[in-house]
Image (cartoon, rainbow over all chains, first blue to last red; front, side, top):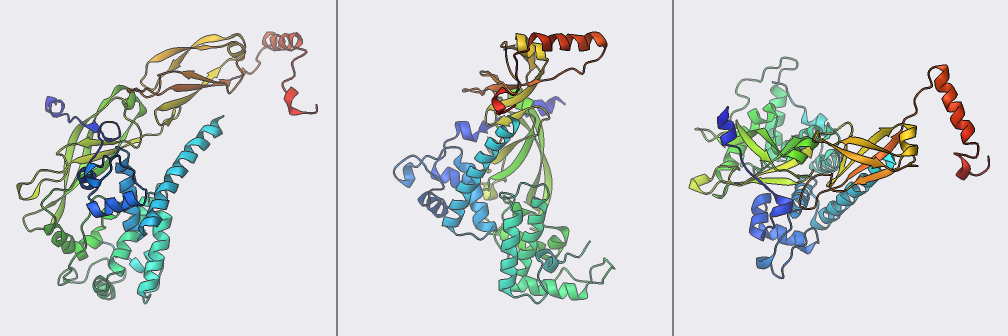
Length: 105
Length: 314
């Protein structure tokens, strides 16, 4: 009973505390660096920093990268198509939240 | 074990061309992809479609599958002898992180070895794993500990992939929001060849709540009030998702639907969210004669009041 408490695992909230470097993001998404660089080129990800070595990705990049990778693989999309879909999905989510709010008014 | 009709899953004929199969898959994948369709059955359907495509797009696997299909006893439910042996596959890239990761028992029995082979080629660096964890809104207010059971793929003594169950007790931090990810360092796949273990990422999903609605860090709730509370103003206790309560001062002359903000009473954090309270005026059903008379008196006292004044016409 107490053992469970002793082994309680602490964690970090990626979106709040974990800006990631290119290798860290690649590892977190099981993606290779070339593909993540292409996602940057297509505007799916917007890291801070001038060169890939200096890139710092905000925590929210994790979700966008994973969605893009799933769409590329599962729907056999090309990069511009996946980039467009990721943006549109975020826009749909934003509008749905707005609509939910309006329906309550 | 049940025979899986992959042709039926994709809605194609048994002699469908590779192009037909690709088109059918793409159409169904777009329809059921969990990133595009949040419906409850979509993910299960997508997995079936993905599994069917994985077999039918690969000429070798398709041939093996067709062969098994021809020998399968209709209605018998028993696989033909030796049905799952003798097929050698190079195996695609094993990926346990995506939606297409899980296969049916049927697929495992027929193509299981392909996954094991793919795993053996895995890079020495351990994979990071991803899973979802469902919490209550109250957990985001108070923090919580959650036991999470994970199905973890591992290699057994024969180099075959088996799923073993692992339980983790995780501290859910105060202030976590829907869609955020928790990172548990070193709790992913075990390192191969003595390498460091990968990390585990847990995506936060909120269990839907009957009363509260959440948008980012802000929380919304409807608060029923009596007509006189709305008219005269009142101090009303508003329950918070964590079980505590906070007093809300309803200003006199508040109409139904008025939105009041309790600053900082949303999801806690460095920048805490706000709690938006929307007033819902509840009218009591007039009961006995004195109560009805009271409403009539109220009407007489408000002869000039026209609730439809701004609707145009009369």
